[in-house]
Image (cartoon, rainbow, N blue to C red; front, side):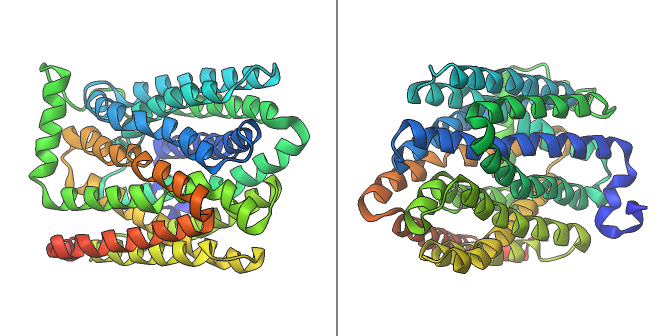
Length: 405
């Protein structure tokens, strides 16, 4: 019955339904892990915003190196297999964190090391997870499939932080980490049921480095993909820095606990869910380049506005708006990348987009230092200004991007 609604068109494909369930479980685990790890860092490092930024960086930095390898492997190795193996690694690593925590031997240094492993596994997972969608649904349905998959992520941004924030009070961070490990196991079981993605997209007999070089040359020669990657780089550097600083901002600006912090992150998730479902219902709209730029500018304004709020309820609508426009940016960007990339290059092209997320520490660590000196709200305001300046600079440097469909 759902497939009669345009917004749920991709659910007519059995493999997509299994992939959606797997994505829902995987993103639920990831969002629960984000707030649980952040709360554990605050306990271990005396509420330091710099410590939060450092742990986020340990997760993000490996993505810069490993994502491009994961993209090349996604085109050489069956994508279904890559998703299963990398998610299996997440089961083991998260269970290890839980055990170290419950035995009271975990340290800040251990969290940094484990963050490197988690980031590497995500970098191996995501190019295959994104590229396999083009193996499951036809191109005309691709934007709907990507938007629905992102809606799964955004739905868990609503439930994940709220559930984790409450559960931390009752079962502690270690109990939540064990629950997250079991959720990753559910994600693996769902992907096992998928029939697509069991053969490699490319049968290249060249070395891995040659395939990586070919992917980079392909992106440079394709203006729409290059423009989208530049926008994703700007968004990663300045738009997502607030993720690392949200726990510190919540305590400093609003004096909230873990449950209220979970609610604030849930509100952002609601906005993001609304955005992705609206995009899924639109079908193949035109002028997507212009839509990307407009929403990126709105994202910047939302960041600047909510960072200066000192009232809990005044911050809620601004967080809702920020979540909505940021989700539209990411869904549109991923759709354009897949539509403009040839099938045998999609893994490598997606990996270059993933690499931009790995560059986040280039801004999050300096912003952590800035937060220590001028306060977390003012540091977040600076990120919004930089995101707006970067978006305007892209419009000036690449005026043709506005006409990308």
